[in-house]
Length: 286
Image (cartoon, rainbow, N blue to C red; front, side, top):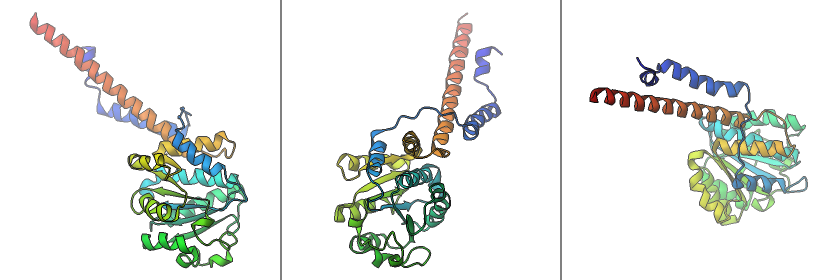
């Protein structure tokens, strides 16, 4: 068998092994491949970076489930680190019933890194059913929708929410959304009706749907998929806010290296096919 024909018959076990190693190694040993930060990610970062200890709280809505964790959960961690490093108060809530567990995972980790206290620096309102009623109700009185937090404590008893009434008392709403209910509902009710400032993080396949709203100014910034999460992690680290592990950046390393080797195998296969066919045709002509 000539070398070109051999290139078209690489055992699939070898291909699978190489791809598996290409994906696994960056998750163990970060490669630090360059990631270009896009303007829409910078816009969201700048909007939060302009806030400070005296600013109104940031509201983060966790509108995704565990299936979207690789793309959206790193965004949540990076935004929390950014807010806490800037001493910005954070209120979390959820429009998805699967989200409270994800919120608690993040709140078990990130506040400890910055010595933040529940009630004073952050609070979690939890999940409630009925998207339209919730978002419209929050535009009138947040405490009428969430009279108590996720743990049953009255909002009037929490320092962070004691003086909050509606969206006018929120600096910025950030929705991390994987579908409906999610960013469309926030745009329709909170932004269009009550003029709330909205930042959005979505999975990569949904990013194209959000771009027009960024261009019109209805959305102040956008994080698109794992790359958007990696970009935000880079901005947080570049500005000296955190040196913690950058999970999205490692994920992008693994994804990029995996794609690279897939392309290499495609090129090798096509080269082998082209030259082996050429040699076969020339043999027939003789």
